[in-house]
Image (spheres, one colour):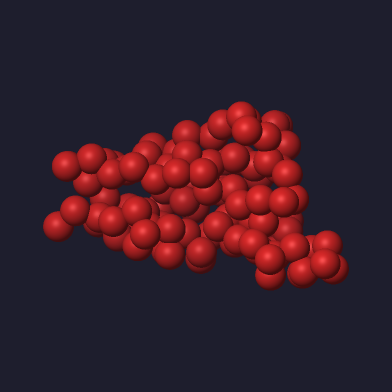
Length: 100
């Protein structure tokens, strides 16, 4: 059965940025998810800044979480354009981190 981007995004709500204590979806790090007919998944994400020391653990957690759903393979593409900014966070994430 072909994985759905929505179910992948829901699973990624369990992948946390350990420094910020919030999940990658709420933080606005997840830009897109594509799934081909063979269940090969490409997740396009960003992080707060280039050179983020948590780049590897976060991308590995994303890959593992998607593989657990039954993906044949997973590629996590980290991009810097558009650059991340706090407005990309969910309303709840902004409240928790910024007190908005």
